[in-house]
Image 1 (cartoon, rainbow, N blue to C red):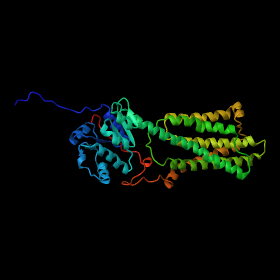
Image 2: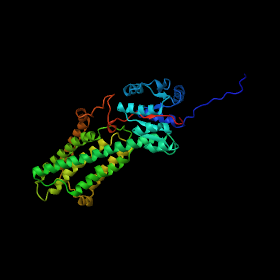
Image 3: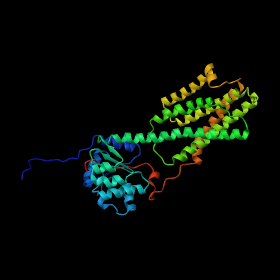
Length: 379
């Protein structure tokens, strides 16, 4: 027998697969490759993608049958071959039992069970009709390169909602505090509607619009309400106490008459704006050029009102003398120190709740973000 030809069969990798897996690794998201093919063949393909653990592929037929044992093995490995449709489903459940959020990608009927049970099912547009029907996301262009943008968009929305919620709830806290303070002290409310319109627009309304649209790469975390309250309650109380203190000092300084009410409310408005602007500066961290520019524009807007006579009249802002305006600035400076201290100290005494321990089942809404399970196309 004389050989006349050598035929080599090779799996074709999607050109964007390597970059997509590299992005997931940078985002602390672990990818796992599962396939019905021979484990050695699957490992060879994964090695071309520089996937960690590709040199140690595992035959799924040797995996433990019990959920706890399978979960323990899945924590160790990355590449699995000879995986049956039922095993794919069991793998998803095993990782979920460890508290992981699991994303599953697939295009064949044998992936339907796992896609249906995964937290996020991703199907290819060219996949089977059953696969597309059970998936939450369908990649119409059949490109894995879409997935990083999907993750980034989700993190942007969730992260920016938290930023904006911090802004609005801080205002709610100091507004409620001052309402009770006014009732107890039996004094006129320290602001006119036009004051709050100006301050809210410059420290909440306009900034919130830009912050909501900004990129955000922070990893999604549970306990949203706890973190927002941890920020807004101390920040709102510091803002409210400082502002109302300046208002009472202004009433004592100016005489607390009908004729001096505008000067008193103007001093309180100056204090509130300075503190609220610093709250915004903390929320806007880490700084970028446009965030610094946003803070500068908001500060410039308020300064413009203070130095423009007709705008002073429109917004009823009239800083009288030198004493109270500087007192307002000084109290705001002390409040800023309190805000910085609260930002660093409060999380230590009011930390995030601990994650569920490994091996304990947790509800889907409380699983931490992490570890998608993926499979290579074409199986």
